Amino acid sequence: MALLKKSAAVAEPFVVPSLESVSSEYGRLISQRASLSAEDTALREEAERLYEQIRTMPAPKIPVAVAEKLGDAVEDSKAKLTARYREIERERAVIDAALAELRRRIDVEKGRASVAVCEVVKPEFGKRVAAAAKALEAAHAARMAYVQLIDALNAEDVQWTRLGSMSFGFLGDHLDGHVQRFIREAKEHGYYA
Image (tube, rainbow, N blue to C red; front, top):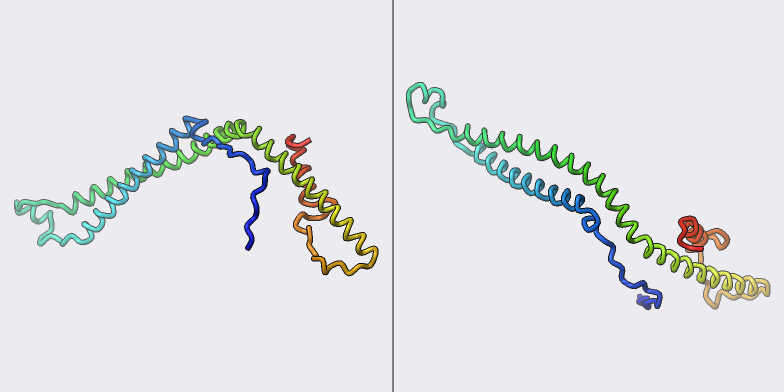
C-alpha cells in the first residue's frame, strides 16, 4: 500500500480550547463528579468487604438475645457489620442522587461552554471549510476536464479503457454530487463566497 504524500495545504496546528478552560463552572462540576465517583467507589469496595465478612461469619453458639438474658458478655459483631453495611447503602443512594443531579448540571453547563468554544474556534473553522471548498472546486474542475476527454474519446469510438478506467463516482453526481453539496453548505453557513 502506498503512503499518501503530505499535501502542501496541510493546516497549521490549532489548539481547540477545552470546555474547562472556557468555563470554570464546568471544570468545578467535573471535579465534583470525579470526587463523588471516587467516594462511591470506596464505599462500594467497603460494602463488598463487609458483605463477605458477614456472609462468612460463623453463627453464634447461642442467640444474642439468649446470651443477654443469661448475662453473658455479648459482642454482636454481625449486627455492627450489618448496621455499617446499611449505612453505606444509604450513603451510596445519596451519592447516586447527587451524581444524577450533577449529570444534569454538567449537560447544561456543557452546552454553555460549547457555545464559548465554538465562538473561539469559528474563524479557524471557517478558514478550513473555505480551503476545503476551494480544493473541492479544483477537484471538480479536474473531474470535468477528465469527463470531457472521456466523452471525446467515446465520440471517436476509441477503446480507451486500456489507459485505465478511473472513476470519480465517490464524489457523487458530476452535476449535483458531494462536492456541490459541501460547497452549498459552506456558502449557506457563510464560510465560502
